[in-house]
Image 1 (tube, rainbow, N blue to C red):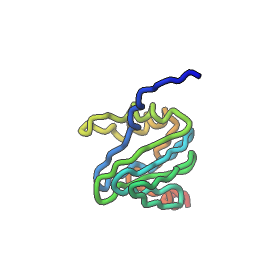
Image 2 (tube, rainbow, N blue to C red):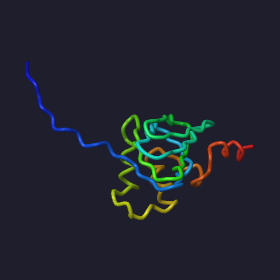
Image 3 (cartoon, rainbow, N blue to C red):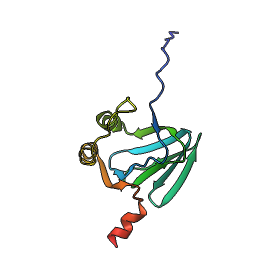
Image 4 (cartoon, helix red, strand yellow):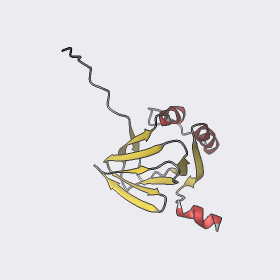
Length: 136
């Protein structure tokens, strides 16, 4: 019997956000996005459902379902997963490991998101329920 030793894997990337930070309302056309909170509080709106997550809790935003999030009243740290692979290309294109790095402009974010199968549906703070109201 052969055995193989592997070096420990690096820790998965985490997202750290500041109090009351909001993401633009968006939808993934090619992947499911999962959120797992390590510290703090995160409120996610996934379609018609609202989820308030604290450390140790998670939720899945399935592809095709508009979603957004807001960080609670203190900083939060969480893991983001996606399946199938590919979302990491978007993260590399718009993210930075430097906390003080400038964010992309809304136009650049919308363009890069579209290149990765993500459609920006509204500004930060807009909820999925507002899409139905716009359509009516």
